[in-house]
Amino acid sequence: MSSQPVHVYKGQALADYGFGDQHPFGADRHDVFHTALQGTPLMERVRLAKPETASPGQIALFHTDDYIRHVERMSAIGEGFLDQGDTPAVPGIFEKAQIVVGTTLAATDAIMQGDARRAFQPIGGLHHASRIAAAGFCVFNDCGVAIEHLRHRYGIRRIAYVDIDAHHGDGVYFGFEDDPDLIFADIHEDGRFLYPGSGAACEKGRGEAVGSKLNLPLPPGADDETFFDAWQRVEEFIAASEPEFIILQCGADSLDGDPLTHLRYSYKAHHKAASRLCGIANEYADGRLLATGGGGYNLDNIAKAWVAVVTALVETP
Image: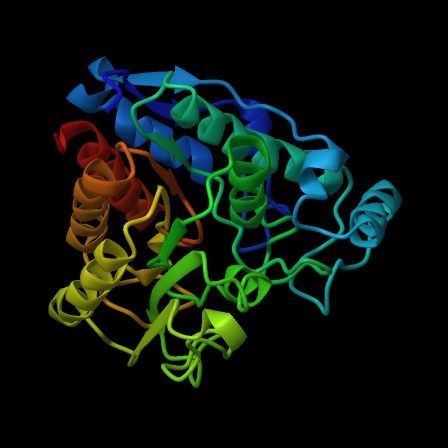
């Protein structure tokens, strides 16, 4: 297990991913988190790392060439939408999305190469983008690219992806639905009440991958107690898979008071998830754990949830 520090990614280029002041996904989320982090003793125990840019070839590990060209073209035009109306084609969004992916890959490399013990990428976790399309404020699916990168560059096959964002991580689920080596566990608000409408408990994978996916939809209003009950199933499911690498998508939109969702967790849910996954990573994956920020549209909740995640990454042995 690495004795290196936890890497936390920071930089204006990373903060710039967003769609303007009138859009729920703005560029202020990065700074709110980092301001809160700077007010804690954690700063003495983390290493701030700089954003990086992914090449089109790296992005193509998950996304099709046609889709990548579509984003580049629409980004240059700078108007319209990349999807059906959620994800605006603001000027420069292609380059901004490249930085999100590149930074997640840099975090992955830092862990794999022993430079980082664990890592947190606050603007990563863009889990709705499919292999062929943008969706839900997500241009490129950095988690999907990271999974493919781990396999192509490092030969890592058995990867666990855990998602506690209020929204179902449909881009990752369907991107690897028939992949038995991608272990997927997602606790989210029931898709009958919330975008994207997927993530029913019966969705367990397809073909040889049936049983490698766990979806746990929760009713609107579910609180910490409900989450902790569901989390026990996730923990057992992930541990049983004995993963070689763990990715945690820890969207803060599942906390009480988010304007777009209806769950009522406190920051304690995020701390427990991150802490327990650190333990599983230590046991099976040589400690290798990457956490990504994901959603969250209440700035105070973002600060609390993500500082709680970093606290777990730093303090868990």
